[in-house]
Length: 254
Image (tube, rainbow, N blue to C red; front, side, top):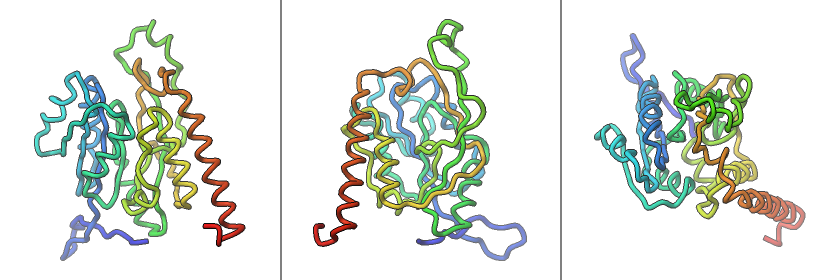
C-alpha cells in the first residue's frame, strides 16, 4: 500500500510536502434545491489539492445551471438518466484524484471532514478507506404535514459505513470495482459487501463527517419500486461468499 505525502507548504519549512489530489464525486438527479449547499460544503473544506466532479444523471430541473455556474471550479458531465450507480461510476472515471470521496447532492460535508479523514489514512498506509459518523436532519423547507410523513432523524450520530461517509484510496476502490448499474436501489449495499469480501481494511473515526438530509424525495426513504433489488444484493453476496469458501477448500477449483 502506497503512503501519500503532503502537498501543503508547512509554516517555516524550506520546501513543500506533497499531498495527494482528492476528488469529491457528486451524482445529482433533480437536486437543484440542495446542490448548491452540497457544493459549498465541499469548497469550505480546508483540504487541498481538491477536485470536484459533478455528474448530472438526466436532471430536468435547474441542477445543470447550478453546477455550470461554478465554471472551471468543477468538472461537469451530463448523462441520460441511468441511476445513482451509473452516475457514480461516470464520476469515478472522470476523476483524477488518488483519493476519492462521494457526496449525495442533497447532503453536506461537515467542516474539516476531509482533513480529518486524510489524517487517518496518512497515519496508517495499510488502511484502504476511512469512514466517519453521520448526523441526520429534516430539511427545513418541509411543512409539518410533510415532516409527519417522513421517519424522524436518528438520535445522535451513528457510524455511516457507506460511500457518503467514506474517503478511499483510488487503488482500493479499483480493487472492489464499480457500482452495479443494474440496481436502482441497493447498489451501495452491494458495493460495501464486495469491499468486505475483497478484504479492504477500514477505520471508523469518531467525528461526524456527513449531514444527511431527510426530505420528500430520498430514494431510500420513499421508493418502493425497486425494493426487490435488496433481495438480489443479498443473494449475490451469499453466492460470492460460497465461491470464496469453495476456493479456500479446493484452490484447484478456481
